[in-house]
Image 1 (cartoon, rainbow, N blue to C red):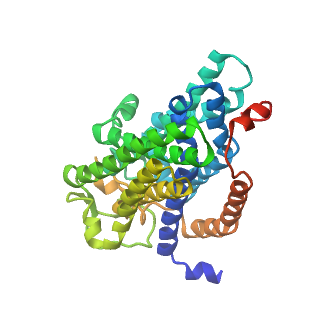
Image 2 (spheres, one colour):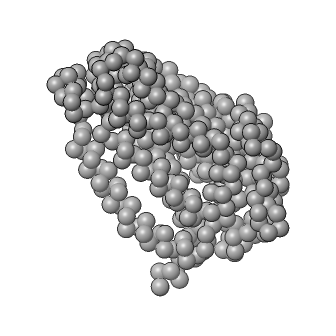
Image 3 (cartoon, rainbow, N blue to C red):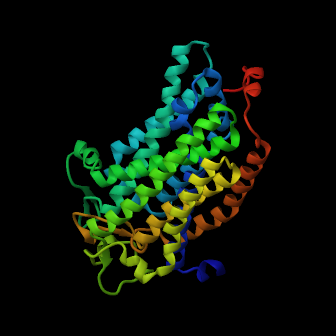
Length: 387
């Protein structure tokens, strides 16, 4: 237990804030190109063979990529119980739509080529499109709402109350800023899917992916910059008032929080975090240039850099807030007031230290084994063993 004593509550909270961010970014980097390919499917593939080529670029890996989504959700549930409870309560209908889309996607993968019927296959192709485009958009909408603040408050006995009736919980999420964030999220993952197709496909599918992906890259970068300016001048930020304890008990009502100023004040306090938005913009522009020039692996790496920078900038800008409350700022959830116990975080860290490297090694091995392009011959000669 010496290590347990050396790792303070503050250190463990900060470590798990970083780890949850890593897991969510890992999900975007891996399952993100799966969703991007799905969203691109009706537009980059015109014939049945071309669609099967696009589908089989992600067919062998999409199930493994889902692991990051499960790990991220599980980590939030175990490390930040109030965050899990409040976010799933407020975003319940939105999460239901995401889960429905993610459930339809594996069914479409499995059943799409079971019948040689154009209408049957077209139906499942659009299901794959929805399974990619819908989650990509709603995740961005959720982030847009989190940065504005969510209308909830805690009672004195820490019972979370979300303002509004059930259907308004969903409709209120669809505000202009959040919808624009959803569009940027979709464009970002379409760019990522196009970059993946340039590596894994060839012929018309690759050519169309480059053309559409380059446009998506510009939309993602331009929209990201626009959202940053909108956030800086159009919305108030949140600040903790006075001195506060970073290793005290998890109770959101122990902190005094005020709403005002700008989120961008974080860059004056911690100038080094500017590296994240710079990576987002530079990575997106490099991905655009790579797609236009026909480069493959470097384009995919640039796309990954853009996604890493854009997502990381959200967490770094908001730190230490993870879910601010717009109706009662005092109820806002932060890194310091909404975690599990010291012992729980420590046990989780030990388990993660053992199993996360194994997951990374296995994932790297799978991608190495499955590396290479999916060709028309692969699909036509193995029609009974591929998607």
